Image 1 (tube, one colour):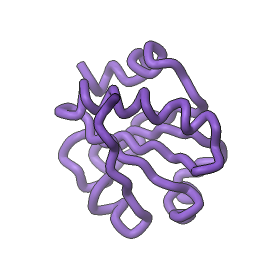
Image 2 (cartoon, helix red, strand yellow):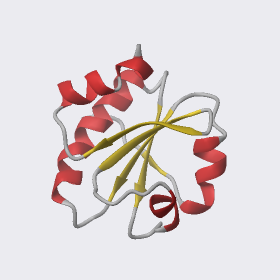
Image 3 (spheres, helix red, strand yellow):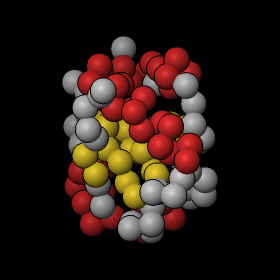
Length: 109
């Protein structure tokens, strides 16, 4: 089992994500979302393998509506990667580990 990912809230987003000195992956999810539950253990594994290069965080869209709305997150799971305060990559929908690794290769290499 992978390492648990920390949660980030609307209030902490700017400081924790946008001002981070390394790329940050944010998993936008909700309790009721089945595909989100499928992706979660995969992201926890990736966190264990690549947490030194990429910060892995989760954001519950039901508890934190502001940030998802600001970044036009309309479907979940949405996995966004932020670099130097900018949205660098957005992956929408549940994907297998191999597909996620390929999508994230720029940030984990």
